[in-house]
Length: 269
Image (cartoon, rainbow, N blue to C red; front, side):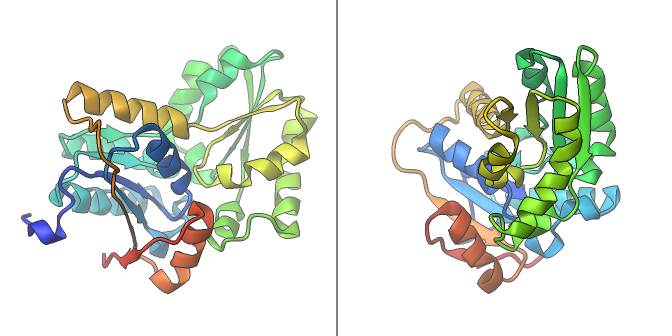
C-alpha cells in the first residue's frame, strides 16, 4: 500500500493499545526517547480487548499494525498486554520491522521478592493466553503467583474514572486475595493499571512494591532502533494521536491522562 507524504508517518514510532491505557507506555517512551516522532492509536471503538475473542484481538492488531507499517513507521510498539498475549507473534510473522511487545513483569518481581509471593493484576484474556502460561512456566517456578483478573477496571479508566469510590471498591475486591496471600510484589499486567497505581499503593501500603513495564519497553525500543541505525539523537520529536472511537468522547480522557491538550484525529477502520 502506498501513501502520500502528506498522509505518511515515515520515521515515526507507532504505538497502539485497545484504548487509552497505552498512554502509560507512550509517556515512558517519550521520556526515554524525546527525539523520536510518535504516533499513538487508541482503538477505543473496540475497547476493552479483554472482552474480545482471541481471533478478534489478532484481527484488530493486524489491521492497526498494517496501517502503521504501510504509512512508513520505523517500529511498532504493542502497548497492550492483551494484544501482546494474543497477537504479537502473529504480527512478527507478518512484518519485518521491529515489533516491540509488553508483558507482565514477573521476572523482576520474582527477583525482588523476599517471601516469594507475587500478586498479578491483569485482564481475563491475558491470564487465559498461552503466552502468559509460558511466562508463568519460566518465572513462576521459584515463586507463588496469585493472579487476579480485574473485570470492569479497564472500562472505568476508559471513561476517565480512576479516582472514584467505585474504582476504590473494585480494587479492594481484587487486592483482597493478594493481601491475604501475603504478597510483597504486585505486578500490573495491563497498561491501563498504572493510572490507578497511586490508589493501589494507598490500599496496599508502602511495604508492597508495585511493578509496571513501560520503562522496560522504552529501553528495548531504544536498543532495537540503535541496532538498526534509526535512533534519533537531536530535535524535539513530534506527537500525533488517533482513535477509532469518537474523538469528542475520547479526546477529553486522553487530555486528562496525558495532562496536556492533544489534537486527536479520527481513524476510520
